[in-house]
Structure formats: C-alpha cells, structure tokens
Image (cartoon, rainbow, N blue to C red; front, side, top):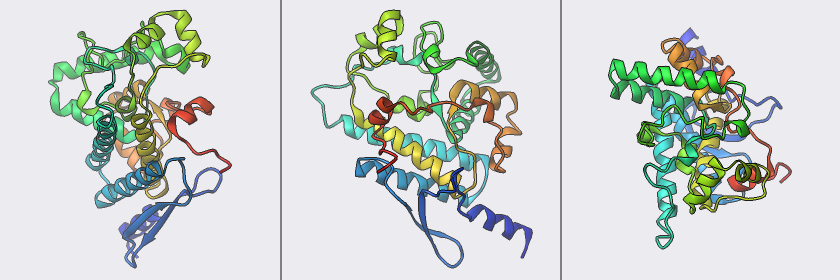
Length: 300
C-alpha cells in the first residue's frame, strides 16, 4: 500500500472525542467514498436543527475530501456562512410584520467576544487577501494585533464593553468583512436596538444582562441555525477528517493566522492544533445559552 493511500485511509477513519464517543453515523461504499452522513443521536430539540447539522457535516467532509487544501477549507467556511444566512433570512421572512431592529451602522453587538471555528477564520483571511491592498491589509493586521493585546485573558463578560470594539468594525460603525462575517454574527438579531445599546453602555443594565435578570427580545431561529451549522462543521471535520475543531475566539484566532499565514493553515490541515491559544470562544455550560441554542439536554 502506498504512503498516499495510507494517509487517505487514515483521514477517512472516524475519530472519537475525549470520552471515546462518536456522534456521526457514516455509510461508505467499497472504495471508502461517503454515501451518507447522519447523527448517531439528536443534538438539538428541533428536528430541523439536527437535519441542518447532519447536512453541514456531510458537506464539510465532502468538500475537504475532494482536496485537502487551504482553499477548500476556506470554501467550507464560506459554504457554512451562506447556509446560515439562507436559513436565517428564510426564518425572518416568515415574520414580515416585525422585522429585526438591526441596521447598518447599528453595532452594539460588535463589542464582545465572538466564537468561531477554523474554517471561518480561513475564509475571512482569504477574503481579506483577495479584496484588500497591501497597505489595507497591514492596517487591518495592526488593528487585530492591538485588539488581541488588549483583550487577551479577558472573560466573555469582560469583553462586553463599549471600549472594546471588534477589530473589523470600521469608522462608520459598519462591519468591514460583512460578506464573510462569522456564523455567530449571522445568527445574532434583536427586536429592540435601544435595549442592545443600554446593555452595552449602561453598566447596571449590562450587569443585569450577564446575571440573567433581563434579556434582549429576538428571533430564535437564526440563532439556532448558527448553532446547528457550527455543530455540523465541528463534527464533520473532527470525526471524519481528524481536524481540531474546538471553538476559538475570533480576534485571538485571527492574530495567530496573520502572524504566521503560510504555516498555520497547513499545520491545521495536518491535524495539528496551531489555534490552541485562541481556544475559548463560545464555550459555555450556561443553561440559558443551551436553551437559546436549542441544545438537547445531555441526558436525553
């Protein structure tokens, strides 16, 4: 057996998590080609979320199986972004009488830690390289490094601050990477912009929000779509491709990538964990967050 064939078979083997579990059921033909990917057990309470997660896992696995390249990994990120937006927009279209209060220039939610996974980071970086001049790239990279220097080691609660904007927020309070904004940003929505502003700028309101004493009215479906797509990406690439897919914090992950753009993607594709210092984005056992996401109880 050739080395190339052995490496291919190793990548096609199903990897287990730290508890020795697998979450996907995979049917393959005699040549090892994947015919169907499904969930071994439901991850979410809503059937549609489980279907989305399984589809995302299958798409991600199939895309990287075509060619294990940085370009394909970034394509997975873009596919996931498009899928999340399609589901979210379809859900919001069902309630035309009460659209979200979110508008261009309304950036109250852009002052917090953002959870991402590696294909999102690679898609953002590829977009920047394709659309920015060298001088513009240098400015963005300086902003990423400066934000990471200020926020490194902070908790998610500490990151919610009017003094800590996302490094991709421009002078007009608009997202400068809107076309490739993270999945979490695509799911976020609000029916009350004034409440969002209060929770960001009023310390007392922010404390009550963090303590669970108040919340912002929103549509759940876009948020649940983001969680379903992300879960599918994580499972498809971790279990079927052997890649490190634990959640990352956006700014910290982008800092790692812009500091070593030629080596980090290749190391990640080889199964290494170059993004490990950026771990922690979107990791929580908070039952309020699990309910918002529609996550199925662990014992069910």
